[in-house]
Image (cartoon, rainbow, N blue to C red):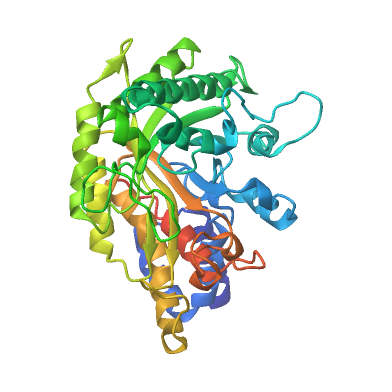
Length: 415
């Protein structure tokens, strides 16, 4: 008789029809038969990330150079309903030489690198493409960098302004008129990071020539000659291009890193976004959202992560966790000390759960643009192999990070 009662209770739990009295008995069952209750619970949660929480779009940044690996490509198709091109939509890819554009759409069946990302979305249904990025101080083609050496100082501002406007006009127009289907036809891209990483960690704008140890300029040629107004101009040009191509719903974002570890930078970004927020072109706002890249470490304080998300939520704009990965490496480290590996993995998987949880606790549904993971597996991570920063290992097998992130999404929370 007791076995029949237990079976009936388990069936009742599965159907979600427990009454108040039965909830007390379920607690007893959980104590006596935890493995049975666990079977019932986990069976109701999808193992496909994009299916877990319908209120959160789950994305991945992907690299078309990895598409020859079928495991990589299959995981991108399966788990994510938004994709960001890691490199394929940056200026040096799309506009490699002056007046030369490489969108890769040839119409003859040949798939070039800049065609692969759009085709992944077109071929597999409802995937959203988030454009990355229109204006950045890096990933510039050499011909743009050469403006400093082959153009008189007095006309550099006007020259760079013309280059920036032309690039935004061409790029936004192309992807506004390249459709994924639907009735009416839907533009392939739903959003763009318009300006990327304009600020240093101290909250000041990148500007003056500033070469890193590898000789790369981490200042900004745009700010150097156009002034701070280049940010506003970039957003205005992007909105005007969207309107000119009847892409009325295109969402425009400011994207950066470091919100969670630099209060000065967090406040500078907030102030700039709030300055842009009331500005319009043709009645449409020139900015719709803000991206927090969230390249964090195993020991990044959760309180700092929450404070960063909260500050961006207070803008009233869309909030995108845009490039999430969590490194096991400390600052300056190239390998994890063996004695601390288990501890760091535990902290890392806890953070994957808690970032998903914090996003839901803080950001209202109507402000959520989603959570995008930065690449698929550890072999693809910008942090490097030893960082073990992603949800999948080097063989594209799920790690515990995957399950913790999935369980965080599954909390189904609202503020």
